[in-house]
Image 1 (cartoon, rainbow, N blue to C red):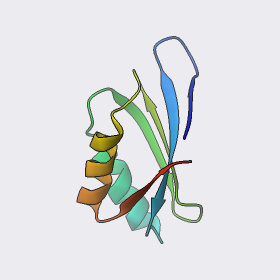
Image 2 (cartoon, rainbow, N blue to C red):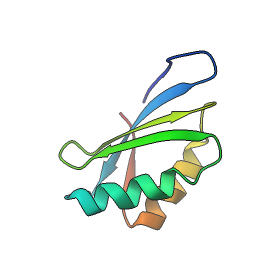
Image 3 (tube, helix red, strand yellow):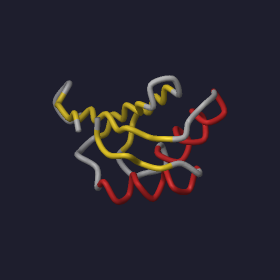
Length: 79
């Protein structure tokens, strides 16, 4: 996991997601994670499997895992 505070009131966390292979995959994962309360930004990159999430506070990893599962992928953990 990589988590750090960028600005007061925001936390950036990088997750590793397996199974993403295209832009549609990126959109599916980003869309599901962006629905988690407190998330302000999501950027998924299929080529690396990394999903960078900016949120108002640290996120519950199980909530992120559930969102990734809903998108049809697997959360491998925090990068």
